[in-house]
Amino acid sequence: MESPQPEVRDYILIEDIAPSDRPREKAMRDGVGSLSTPELIAIIFGNGMRGKSVLTMSQELLRRYSGCLSDIAARSVREIVRDNPGVGPAKAIGLLAAFELGMRCRDEDVERKPVVRGSDSVYALMRRQLQHIHHEEFWVLLLSRSNAVVDRVQISSGGTAATVVDPKLIFKRVMERGDAVSAIILVHNHPSGNCRPSMEDDRLTLRLKEGGKLLDVAVLDHIIITPTSYFSYADEGKM
Image (cartoon, rainbow, N blue to C red; front, side, top):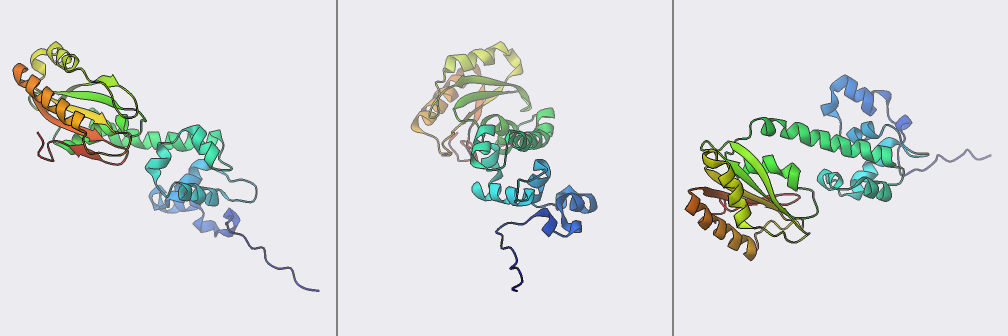
């Protein structure tokens, strides 16, 4: 009588992993920072599905999005559930909640002490607001003489390719603050992922620079934020 052939699987079960190397045990022993990205997702998911471990599910989810966490973070609960067998609404919500918590933690110091020291600090301040939305928004940062952020003002919200910006509305908000505002920075997003400014972006920036001179308010920069990067007029010598 032939001995039974070992089962051939293209996935691993948690039972296949040595107890000391399982995600929770590793986290307890070496800290959460020792876990790989699939192991972190497995901790969030908690359990797998019939015949497939939570770790394999996590690895498959990452491969589905080319290992790009920001791509996963930009998805809706419905999209994650639809595209990932075994991942129900509870798992998807838990995963997106973890992303949101991480972004809030990252931005906490920026929110507490918002002082603009360059384009990177504007990006850090505004990326959570603009990085993953699927329509264009236009914002203005109002700055004091020491470049502290007096206020962040949303000027307009539009479609996937453009939003209408009225310069009069921008300078009205500046004048409402009186002497508290000495400079502004323009910020908007490109959901397409193309961070290069359009001709209309250039024309608007020039109009606002000229308008600012009349009020003795400097337009220091115009930042364009995409899902993965940003463009700074000042850094590129366009101011």
